[in-house]
Image (tube, rainbow, N blue to C red; front, side, top):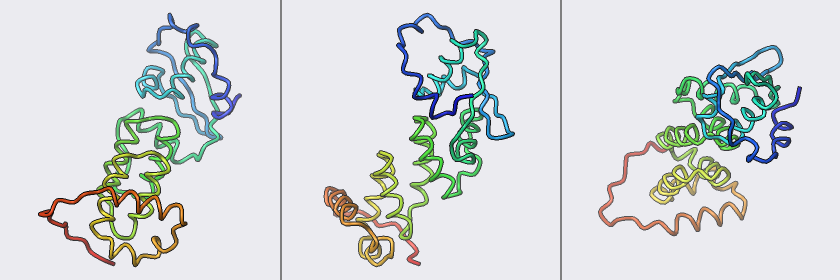
Length: 201
C-alpha cells in the first residue's frame, strides 16, 4: 500500500491518457490512519480542485474501474482528518481554535485545498492581536496566504509601538525582520483612519 507522499510522486503520468475518463459517483477513496479509515467519494474529492486529490482519484480509477482505492496517510493525523472532514461536510469543526486553524491552513496550502485555506485565513484575520500578529505574518509569508498577510501587516503598522515590545518581534531573524519592515513600509494609511480598540496584554 503506497503512502500519500509516495503516491503523489508516482502520479506524474500523462494527463492526456485520462481525457475521456469520467468521474463515477460511486467511486470511493479510503484514507487509512493506522486502524482508522475515512471514506470519501471521488466526486467530492474532485470538487476540491486540488491537483493532489484529483490525481489520487485518477490513479484509483485507472487501477480500479469502480474507483475504489485505499491509501495510507503519513501526515499529521489530526489536521489531515480535519481537512478530510471539511472536504466532506464543508464545515470547520472549531472555527475559534487558533492552533487548529493554523495547522489547517498549513495542511490546506500543502494539498492545495484553496477553499479551506481561504476560510482559515478569514477566521485567523478575526483573531489578530498584539501577541500573535508576528506569528501570523510569518505564517502568511511561508504559505502565501495573501489576505492574511495584508491584514496582519496593516495591524502591525497600526500598532507598531506595541508590537515592537513583544518577545515575538524581538526574536525575529534579520531576514524576517527585513521582510516585515518592507511589507509595512508599503502600506499607506488614510489620514482620517480610525484605529480599532485593542487590549494590550
